[in-house]
Length: 389
Image (cartoon, rainbow, N blue to C red; front, side, top):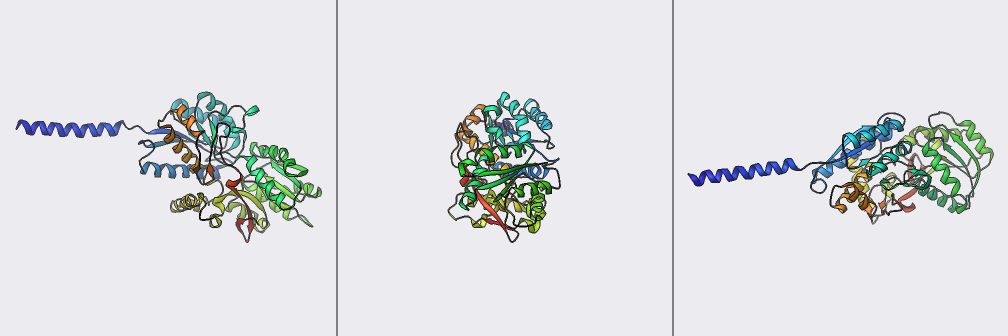
């Protein structure tokens, strides 16, 4: 009888110990800043969905370092001031280990000074370079980003134009932070590729007509016009150029534009337009030995299975949140501990991390880790994207 009581007691102790151990496994808490309303909501909401999809798969497979990952999400409303306020919430109220996002260059710059001062590893999904440019833009010790640098996209464009014998370009750039970042690199790198900038115009990315700018730029008779904006404005400008009389210059869009929405809005005017983009836009053309191919195809399958493509068709932005989470996971596994400084140190040492947007190899000087080989120049032909010839 005594033996039976002892045995039951021991079994209860083991069961209780197991329960306590499970309860003691605290999640790794991260923050997510996504513009789910406002002018870039079409990017932000899809990014949040992708981040949640990616984290679910990670958690279903044991989490990171044996711990589940929980993401606390806030909507930045496409407003830099709101983004800063939400970043403070994540750090001071939610006590997150790291932040994924925000979505736009302006919001990225708005939170950067704060997250740098607080020592929060932040993996942004913004297009512009200033967040990791250093110099007058401030230190980027704790700041990383997954989309290709604007300078890399500009180099890809100029390499392509140079190969086609183009030597004169005109520029139409948005007045927002992303557009002005593009303008800076388009002008500073032109000479390196033998390009002469014959004319420049700016555009309000919220406007719906750029006929005047198109006419002025065409009068300079450039061989190509580079349009640097995201969203519907790029398609509107494409139509404006298409409506001009006479011979028209080659139109080049930026790396933030490739996606079904551009084709839909620009219609027939999109034919022949070229732009740099991530490989997700033309997966059927990837070589079988391309390390990105299986990652991209699985991502597309998962995205499609979730039904996201109905409201948010796959575009060049679609994989950014996946890549940010992938880098976070690789950084934590390399660090071996969910500690901010250790994660930061590990992130800038990551080499050969395969994502949707490219194969990431970071350094202390380069907190992006992607080169021109991570992009392809796309051409619109018969209403679809394909590698430009």
